[in-house]
Amino acid sequence: MTGMEGLRDFWQRYRRNKGAIVGLAVLVLVLATALLGPTLFPGNPWDMAGAPFQKPFDPEFPLGTDTLGRDILMGIVHGARVSLLIGFVATFAAVSLGVILGSVAGYYGGLVDDLLMRFTEFFQTIPSFVFAIVLVAIFTPSIASIVAAIAIVSWPPVARLVRGEFLTLRTREFVQASVVLGRSSRHIIFVEILPNAVSPIIVAGSLMVATAILIESSLSFLGLGDPNMMSWGFMIGSARTVLRTAWWMSFFPGLAILLTVLALNLVGEGLNDALNPRLTREGR
Amino acid sequence: MQRLQFIAQRVVKGIVVLLGIIILNFLLIRMAPGDPASVMAGEAGAADEVFMSQLRKEFGLDRPLHEQLAVYVKNVVTLDLGYSYRQQRPVADLLLERVPATLLLTGTAFLLSLVVGVLLGILAASRVGQWSDSLVTVIALFFYATPIFWVGLMGILLFSVTLGWLPSFGMYTVGGKLTGAAFALDVLHHLILPAITLALFHMAVYARMTRASMLEMRDQDFVRTAHAKGLREGRIVRIHVLRNAILPVITMAGVKAGYLIGGSIVVETVFAWPGIGRLAFETVMQRDYNLLLGVFILTSFMVIAVNLITDIIYSFVDPRIELGQ
Image 1 (cartoon, each protein chain N blue to C red):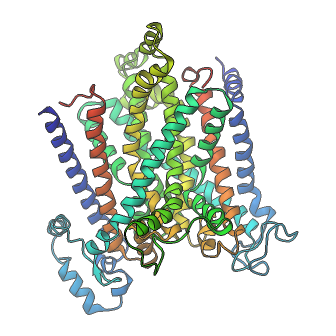
Image 2: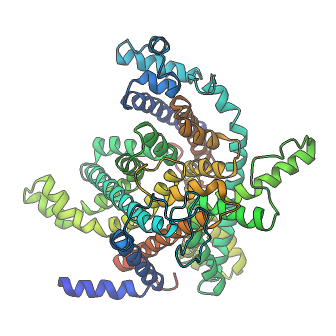
Image 3: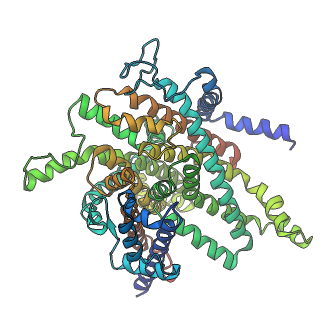
C-alpha cells in the first residue's frame, strides 16, 4: 500500500464515524482560535476593558466582563492557547516517557521488565490528581511545573500499553529475523517494532490530551495555574464566589473546556476506528 | 488458607507502596526550592531565624540524609505527621477529623456512579442502535468531557439558585441544632448535589465500559451455547453475560478510586464540604506544605486500602483468579 492510498483508506474509515467528523471540526476551530486568536483580539486579557459585571450578549462584550472588568471573550480566546499548549506538550512528554519505559520493559523482559512494571504500578497507585497538586504547589506554579506534573502522573498507562504491544510483537518472525541478522537492540526497538505499535499509541495519546486539559483546568481552578497566563480554569475559579450574581463568568469558560475536551475525545474515537479496524465491528 | 496467603501478599505489597510514597514525600521536601525547614514551616516561620534553627534541629536537618530519612519514616509510621504551623495543630489531628466527611462523600459517589453507570450500560447494550442507546452514549460522552468543578457550579446555579431545591454550601445547616434522624436527613439533603457532581464523571466511565463489555460477551461461544440450549433471554443476560461483563468494571472501579479522591478535592472546594479535599485546597492557598504532604500520605493510604479491598472482593467474585500467584 502506498502512502497516498493508505491515507485515503484511513480517511475513508475515519469519515464513517460522524461524531469524529464533528469533533475534528470543533478541534480545528479551537486550534485556529489558539493560533490566530491573539492576532484577532490583540491586547492583554488581564487588562480592564470595561465596567465590571457587564452582562453578556452586549455588542461591545458578547460574553460580558468579569469582576475586574476584563473581557471574558478575550480571556477565552487567549486561554485556548494555554490549554492546548499544556495539553499537547504534557501528553508528548508523557507518551515519550511511557514509550521508552514500556518498550525497554517489553523488549528485554525478565528482571528489567519486572522492575519497570513495579515502578509503573507504584505510580499508578498514587492518587494522580493529589500528586499533581503536591508537585505544582511545591515547585511553584508555572507552565513548566504544570506540564511536568501532568506528564509525571499520566505516563503509566502508555508504558503498560507499549509493553503489551512489544511483548507480542517481539515474538513475530520479522523481529526474529532482525535478531538473527545481528541488528542492534536500538534498531530493533525503534525501527522494527515501534512503527508497528504506533496506532494504539496515537489513539491513547489523543485521549490523553483531553485528560491533560481537564487536569490543567482543575489545577488552575484551585489557584495553581501559571500566574502570568490567562486560562479557562483560572477564570472559573476566580468567578466562583460571584456565581449567584454573575453566572456568565463561569459558564462560558466552562463551555470552552467542555467543547475542546469533547472534540478531542471524539477525534480519539474516530482515530481508534480508523487505525484499529479489526477492533471495530458493526453495531458498536 | 490459600486466600489468607493471597490477602497477606497483597497487604505486604500495599505496605511496600506506602513506604515508597513516604520516601517520595521525603524527597519532595528536599527537592523543593529553598530551605526544607521553611517548606516544613510554611511561610509562617520564614521570617524568624531562631524558630527556623529550632526546626532544623527538630527535623535533624544537620544530620546525614539517610539518618533524616530514617527519622522521617519512623515519625510517619507512628502517625506523627508533623505540625501545621499555620493552623497551630498537629497535622494528624487536622486530617483525622476530616476523614468521615470525605468518606461519606466519596463512598456515596462511588456507589452511585457504579450502580447507575452499570444500569445505564446494561440498558444501552440491550438496546444497541435504538434511541435509548444513543441517549446513554451521548450523556456519557458529555459527562466524560465536562470538568467536574463546572458540573458542580452549574448544578448550584440550577438546583440551588434558580430552583431553590438543594443547599449549595457545607454539610449541615449552620446553627440548625438538629439531632438524630432530622440531622441525618439534613446531611443527606446537603450530600445530594456534591455526591452527584462527583459521581457523574465516573458514571460515564462505567456506563461506557459496561456497554462495551456486555457487547463483547454477547458474541462469546458460551453465550451462543446458552442460546442453543434454549435458555430464556433474560436468564442469559443476567447469568451468562452480565456476570462476566461486570468483572472488568469492578477492576476499573478499584483502579479509579484514586481519581475519586482527587475529584473530591475539587468538589469539596466548590461545595465547601468540610473534608480532606477542602483541607487540601486551604493548604494550597496558605502554602502549608507540611499539611499538604499529610493529605498526600493519607489519600495514598486510602487508595491502597481500596485497592486491597477490591482485590479481596475480586478473589471471591471471580473463582478463576489464581490465589497462589
